[in-house]
Image (cartoon, rainbow, N blue to C red; front, top):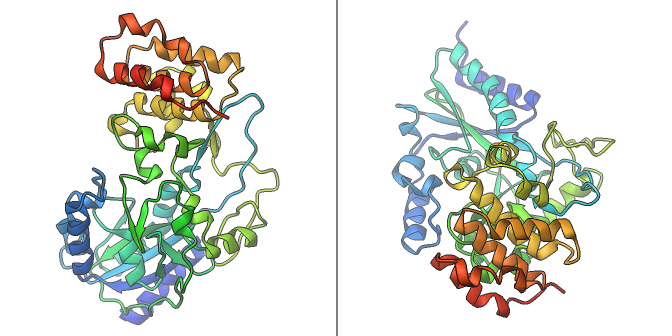
Amino acid sequence: MPTGPEELAEQVLAALADAGLVAGIAPAEPFATTRAELHRRRDAGLHGGMAFTYRNPERSTDPSRIVPGARSLVVGALGYLRTAPRPDAGAVPGRVARYAWSDFYAELRRCLDCGAALLRDGGHQAVVVADDNALVDREAAYRAGLGWYGRNANLLVRGHGSWVVLGTIVTDAALPASAPAAGGCGTCTRCIPACPTGAIVAPGVVDARRCLAWLLQAGGVFPTEFRDALGDRIYGCDDCQEACPPNQAAVRGAGGGGGDARRGHTSRSPDGAPPEPGRRPTVDVLDLLDDDDAAVLAAAGRWYVPERDARYLRRNALVVLGNRADPGDERALAAVRRCLRHRDPLVRAHAVWAAARLGRPELADELETTEADAMVRAELRGRHAVRPRA
């Protein structure tokens, strides 16, 4: 017998819940308000050169560009709280944001495929999109009743906070919409002062030009004024999330160290192992600076690296090295010396800063007479003004 819309919706949502997702349904109407806001923020420069959904707001806010005749969005959230193992002894660890500890989007897509298969079996079109330029996933999730917008612009899902990755099934099936999510931030503003660079410039508005998570992915020189604030971050930043009370409650519910958030429950790895072999929540920046480009990019996996060029990961690693290495660590100093002789001027420039930050500006003295690149020479001029690490 043909399945009615209500029964089909129940089956799809049940399949997604069984796969480990929090899910809901929204009409596939264009996101007109979101489109206007994307244009406004891009015109104001708040995107900081970020493409993603800013590249083509007309596309990323119109589900019918994905599935012609789209009627419904089935949206799923996968929790990614996990336990963090301790860094190896002797390492200079670069901290990785939680969402990038593993390829959680691959797991999310597998879960969404379970619901998409049911829709296709029912004779409907169904396309899965996640972490994609094609759709503003937070707005889809908000419309599907999964959560509410926090003041840091993240979507907060009850029981999980914003420790989730989001994805959508776009379908031409007409399915009943889910109820809006209850909840909100109330008077809480903890995430705003928690941002180390003041990137949350208004409730729900982030200036990407100040956001460490974006600056680590952007091309060019890492801004001098934010290098100290970068601390030990090598990829991503969780500070605004860690300050958020619903997120703190989710971590406590996971045993204090993270867990696997599934259907309102959490589990904790007893040995603190990461969820995917070979991937860790920290990266030894000394190893990163020692390895060749192929090994560096392989270790980065699915991270967003500008132009897939290892020079940007080396840039980030040198800032972390300057911030966190022991000035007496011979391995760290040897890495700086090698980078001062690197063929790439971007690497040499950040090595000049790292040497000065470690209280050893004289390591770059030989470049005074040999360096022709303007970017490196600018770092040489400013190196004696760089405040050494405390």
